[in-house]
Amino acid sequence: MGSAYPEPPKQPTNGRSGAYRLSSGETDAWVLFDHSIWGVPIQQFAVGAPDLTIAELMERHFLPSNTLQFSSDPLLFRWADETVLVDTGIGTQMLGNTGLLPQHLAALNIRPEEISVVLMTHLHADHIGGAFDPASGRAIFPNAKFFISEAEIDFWSQSPPDLGDIRDLPQELIDFTIHCARRALSILERQIQPFKPDSELLPGITAIALPGHTPGHSGFVFKSSGGEFIGTGDTMHDPILHLTHPEWTSIGDCSRAQTAQTRRKLLDVLARDRTRFHAYHFPFPGTGRVRATVDGAYEFVPERLWWES
Image (tube, rainbow, N blue to C red; front, side, top):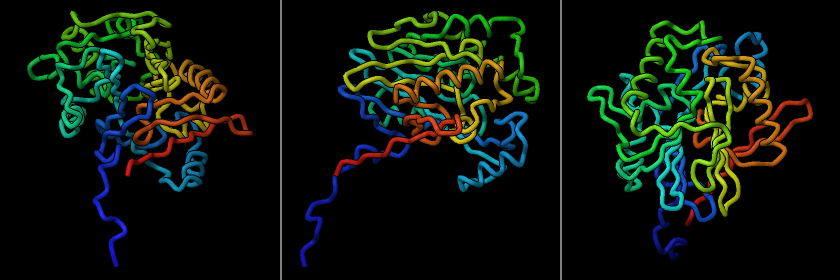
């Protein structure tokens, strides 16, 4: 009997591990896996929530009740004549957790020098760390304009920054976070393009203010022939915890009240308009849509992976 597959199957669009090709009209776009983070204990991402409530919610979704693992995933766009990166991953800032963004860019035949625009959601180390080499102080993307919100720049430039509700993290982690943000601002000073909320940064790309996690935390709206797509950064960390309970916040949020308010407003818009979006820490690739549930909460509907044969 002859083979049902006379020719080897072609390489699937999403066959390269860690690089997910987004379907986005005429625009080439990818989600690129950089690193993972263990959320232990889980309570730090649901501050003040009863342990039993958390455990019942996670077990209802067939997940461990005491731990989470987060993905960390920058976005990449070929946008007209620009090569645009959204956030830069962790880089080599932390021993034992080197970011994989450079190898995914190399697999796509994109050299660091080709990145012309970097859009920063905020300046936490897992987002800005891949922008510079901590040993040499060298910028990794030397030809890129770095768009960072004025509010974010002002926040980290304070001495010391007013960390608000951030009081339960180890002091060494707080010190590391401040040092990394300030070093990035110093090294990238000549490349930085400050922006205000609702600014059009490039034709079809608009910044939106999503404060709370940090005062200058931002999202980015991409409008193309493929429709509208929003990068939401760290507005929410987990699709179960933070969509079922939008009021649950994290110990890393500068303002927990503002985080919950911002998240609820964003989820209302995403559900109403059925807008496709990406959340930086959702399970890879972290893209999908949101729908409202009858109990006033929300549900994440991840997009289905499509393969070419």
